[in-house]
Length: 298
Image (cartoon, rainbow, N blue to C red):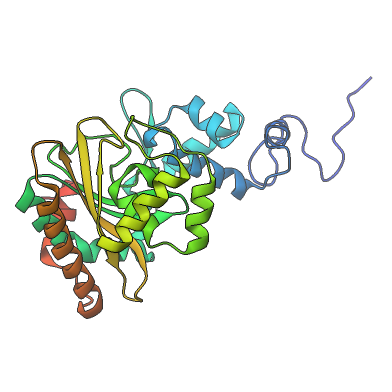
């Protein structure tokens, strides 16, 4: 007796669906996700997976974080590789390529801020010899728009594109202090992880820090993320007068005077604000030179 053909309009077990995935593959991913997901939703879930695991993931990690079957993850990863959106290292770990940064830089306010701020951050980095950050806030997290440091191969969370909780860094606390009240109250109501014995984790401790930062208009966080390390930060006022970004400096305890660093960070933040308000459309030559070096073109 012959096998019945698949019903019209339905893909067989090994036939591709309209989005290129097999029916078996699609069914597996719908079961894993608990609801039907479109091809676009699966692709977006895969890209979002790179916000975890330090940004370098194995295929199995991509599958797990994106809630996709290994078959689907493998297929989508190779589609993005062919497009040029992923890089793969010798250990078989995948990273988002610079193509996404190039696309984002043409349209996002945060990347325009980075381009404007970069020459002033370079000056601050050269003046102090310390790690310098430009950050923004995304919900309850710090997002690093730029990180200038003496060791370019650093892969921790406070690298460009990395994320950390607001309460563990000076830049995060500075942005939290000037966030809308509903953002602050929601953050205080959530549980928070302690990285060291000095990490502020209770609502009372974080609120006390926030109130102090509002009075002083700068933040100092010592030993909150790692023993022996401290950071200072100054909130950065945007073109519209809102405070959603910060300039920060990281130092080793006992090897720098935090309040001197605050003065330097504040002067840098003031110059960035002035550049945002009065700047020209053309990038600063220092920004162009830095971007070329990062891209291996100089």
